[in-house]
Image: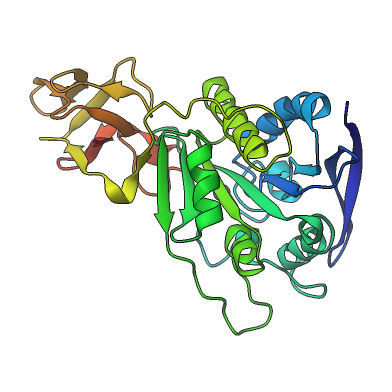
Length: 330
Ligand SMILES: [Zn+2]
């Protein structure tokens, strides 16, 4: 049994002191330190449940090194029930009026509240970490996906080892020369020599048990890869699709109407010709069967538009002609 304890990061904000709790699980044996961060965005809550499920696993099976797990990195945004601490109703995610703490790493001791939060987390938990997994959530219509910096071999090995269906590689962003630098946790981690990946779970403002289980396995697999736990990673025989190496077929609405989905979920396999749902025309009530034109895996399933992460109206399944109804990767 590894020793676990609840510790606290103390952030001195402009008008209050914020205590951010986290779990530390220490094997007592030298090894890597894995930092698992969740809820940098307050509407992206599934990572906290992933962490809750991982706690007994690490208590039981951690053989070397140390794991630090922060379920509520941005406590103020969580309490605001929205992406950022100062997001109002339907405020766009990237609105200039809001502060996205995942653009402020490594933060600043005397900056804005967001910069002070990331500064406190940088100085305490991140400073100790050798590897980083940052848990985020995107809309339920998108399949759970690992984001990784292309060409960073150790991070790409972690991504492969997650056995998550989709991996989306992207370029490492240069650091700004402004002070403080202000970048994402994953970008800052790579720049400071820590292999890091981000997992975007499917579904915001909610916990989807299937996606949580997928991600618990993904993180456990990485812990095995890094030698923190014994055992072989699971699910490596399942198909994993690297988005940059695959073709995508975007299925769009042939006319306007309501797109009613069927029993599929994002990440599911679909076969060519399979019925994905029905489009009910709002002009003629004509019903159009929407079928998969190719076999592959649903990366996106369902009609939604920009700002659906902050606006219920943007999640509405009414499609304008040409709106995307599904994306199959194959
Ligand atoms: Zn996020």
